[in-house]
Amino acid sequence: MTDDEIASVFYTGFIKSVIDEDLWADGHRPLLAHYTSIPSLEKILKTNEIWFSNPLFMNDLEEMRFGLNTARDSFLVSDEVEKALGTPHRRDVAQNAYLHYHNKFDADDAINVS
Image (spheres, rainbow, N blue to C red):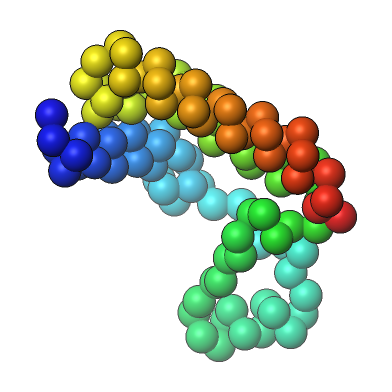
């Protein structure tokens, strides 16, 4: 597989499966309340836009860890990722690299989120 073919399978397969399993994508959306001030709510309603920041800029260590751990778990069990990588060896290399950097961040850098 070429890099473009791998990217195509990953994005169309993995990302699509995440969206398909997400109840929010099916119209079951929770109320927007978490860390939303009245001025922010007013801007959302006036502009019909919501802006999200990089999760690494969060000031809540547990919330950041939850998001990163959920992403890690999804990556490690994804059939689409395995298919995109093409071989068990590539899958193992990708998973080992992912876990290496995930664990390094968790051990060395995540504690600085406050």
